[in-house]
Length: 236
Image 1: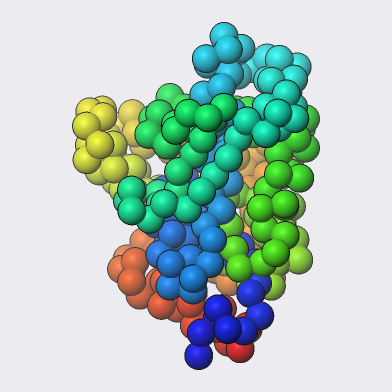
Image 2: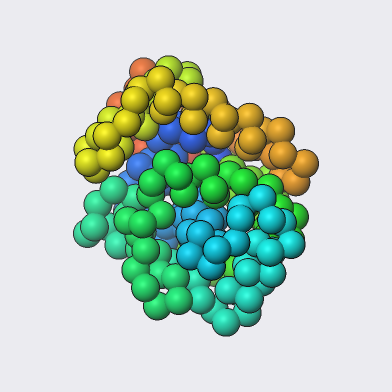
C-alpha cells in the first residue's frame, strides 16, 4: 500500500535540537513520497537575513519588521532537494541559495532568538501553513503539532538525551569542517533547549496526541520504519 495513493496527510515531527528530526523527516518524506517542510530552516533564514541587514537578533521590532518585509515580497522559499544530502532541503533567501550558510552554530543560536519574537512567528505562520495546505507534507520543528498544524493527522515527538544530541551535533559540525569544542557544543545545545522550552510564545512541548520516540539508542532506519508504519495505518 502506498501513502501516495491514499489520503495525503500532514505529518508533524517536533522535538529538541539534535534529536534527529531533520534526518528522520527527510527520509520519511522520501519513503512516503511527501514534501519535506523544514520549519527550522525558515527561522535560520530569518536569522541570517538579520545578520546581513545589520539588525541585532535581540532587536524585536527590527527583526519583526524585517521578517514581515521578507514574507511580503516572497523572499523566502524552500524546495525539497534530496540530492544535496544533509537536510535534504534547499533554502532560498531573496533568490540566493543559503542552504549551507544557515547551518552554522552562530545562525542556529540566532534562529532560537528570533523565533521567540511573536511578530516573527506570526509573519511566518501563514507561510508554513500555506506550504502544508494540500497535505502530503512531513513538517518538522518545535511547534508543528502544537501551533502550526495542531490538526495534523499524525504527530511525533522525537527526543534523545542531551549527551547523545551534543555528540551528534559535534560530529555534524566536524563533518562539515566546522571545528569546535565538544563542551561548547553541549553548552550550546543546553542553551537552545532552555530558550526553546521557556519562550513565552509557542514553547517547545510534546502535543498531547503526539507519539513519543526516543532516538538515543536507535538506528535511523528503524525509527523511519516505525513512523512510516504509523502514517500508513492512519492514511490507509
